[in-house]
Image 1 (cartoon, helix red, strand yellow):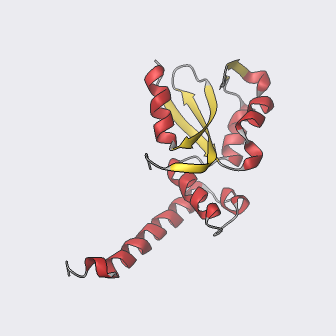
Image 2 (cartoon, rainbow, N blue to C red):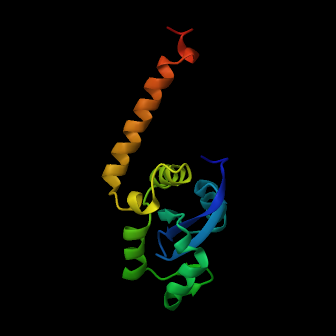
Image 3 (cartoon, rainbow, N blue to C red):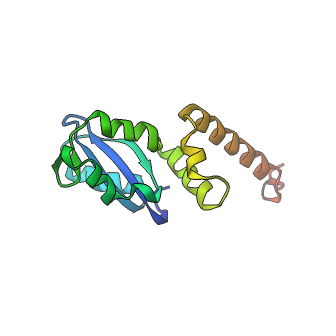
Length: 147
């Protein structure tokens, strides 16, 4: 997913492993690319906590919402409010974030329906969809030469 350019911004929340500080940022490239850019400048190992693409949670709004926890720039003190936001309003894996993004953009589901699913359910759906895609590809003309 590293070379994908997204039409709308992805909002990500990452945390410094030692400092515990949480960065709330946005990107139009893959979060892996953005995380690598930030990691190159950080002495602290950074961990992806969650992400969203819902317009309600624009980066600036989140910065204002959590202003009282701001430590420096886009970095915030860890606290229950931010962690609650991540657990209720974010996808907690890159796979689930990207899957949901493309499902919503394709008109196959609403953000609200997908965010309501728990991580295990999303993982099972993604696994099933990958399995079906591989089966479909295997049955396609592309692999007839190999059969």
